[in-house]
Length: 95
Length: 224
Image (cartoon, rainbow over all chains, first blue to last red; front, side):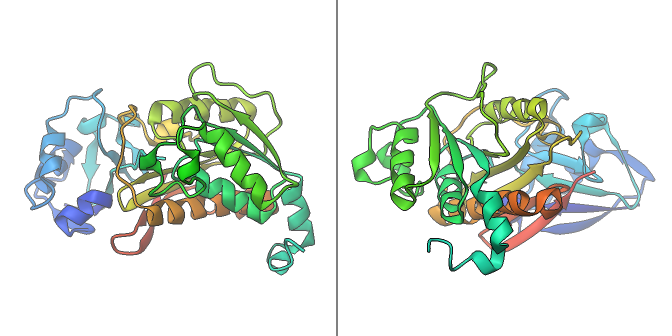
């Protein structure tokens, strides 16, 4: 299956990646697996650590699946299917 | 005439709507000093400024209303004084306080600008706007990046839903003045468009507007 991943902010700056089409052999996988895959890339190693995050802990990123915060779904266990879009956005907290 | 160079853009009716509007600016730091100045110059009739902090030397790189003489002074008082130097006819109410669970202002408000520096306070402000059915225009800034998101009156999607699970604590972020001015100007323009044209004037209500000054990229992140 193919999953479109959009990367923003400091992650984009560190990795040089703004959009990535991830090709995965399975028909569906948990979001945690997507993060592990992305975390292999240079500049995205923070996502590998994020993949080990337990649900309920504060995160440095907003994770959106099809525009919806995954913590309104099943967190990092949310099932990602072919053709879906994952957006990873480090929200700016300063004012 | 103060507004002679913009009246063709906003129209006479639009200018009158601004003059009869009240906007609350929560946080008068890097974003809030830009937002409040843009709103005053645009012709908003009344501002409510909310901040618990005092001006420090390290604020002067980006908080455009302040100067050396303001160091140690309350931000709401210093910003109010500078804004009145721009337009004497504007009404300004100041509140030297934090936005927390007890936050309340007993004034009719048309729009609220979230220029705060932590998500815990932002979520209290979100609840305040939800209960009062007021537009909330959120913005955040960090380094060369920022985002703007509008939560329209009556919206079921709230700020705390979009930013769920994000660390709510305050931290001192790095930020350049140019980033504060760019993001703050978009935030202020969103409020002006709402005051002049109503909810149909909003551009950041169904997507996060991501601002990236490392590549001069403005990009929407669609929300469901």
